Length: 262
Ligand SMILES: *C/C=C(C)/C=C/C=C(C)/C=C/C1=C(C)CCCC1(C)C
Image (cartoon, rainbow, N blue to C red; front, side, top):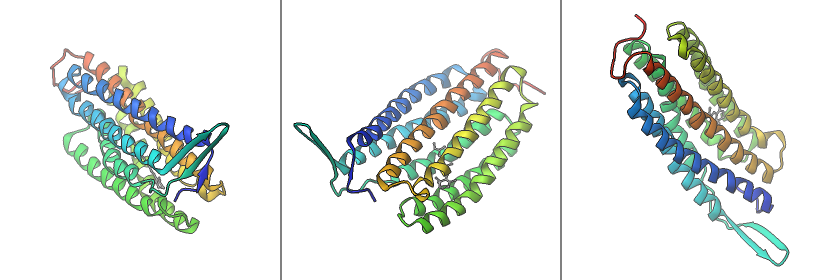
């Protein structure tokens, strides 16, 4: 639920961050799909998935932006500006449906660049993907509640699959490092840190209203916080994945689908 009024600065801060997210997701989508054509065949799936993630987010940010502008009526009369709630619902579900689709795909793109044996890729993909879906589904009832105890309960429940995913990703990406060509080891290691750190932003942003932040400020903090984290986790990590794929593709001539390390 939105407060009945917010300041013009706060309204514009969210407006501009949502707008930045639309631009970042749109531009990244073009960049990733073009790179899918330039990398060696074994990386094409990872690059296509990276592009799908930002394409799905591009659409949802458009809808979130629309929902934000519909939720407020901004009037500027001489030197008096006011931003009042119109009563239209600001739909949090766009964000959660977006995550439900993009988080399992993001995990898959990371697993794919690790280049584990196919059966291990599939089993890890299913395990992490289902844990991610569970995490988002458990977070949603908390997100739409303005009752702090309800929020804490669902936060704590969602933290269980979250901890499992972050821990598994951190350990598995680390153990895959030794099997990677030296030219991409540093990049994979950075992608691992950027992913884990950006993911940790979400459960922190979620608790803003529970830490006694006034309602108008927590609405702003949540929208700006999630938008920044999404840009880093989707566009930033995607750029690292394209860099890894391009670098590793150059290790052998393009089109060669042999394993780089036997
Ligand atoms: C592109 C979107 C990404 C990477 C979204 C990631 C979302 C999370 C890691 C969300 C985690 C949450 C918790 C760990 C507890 C509270 C509820 C959530 C869903 C915000």
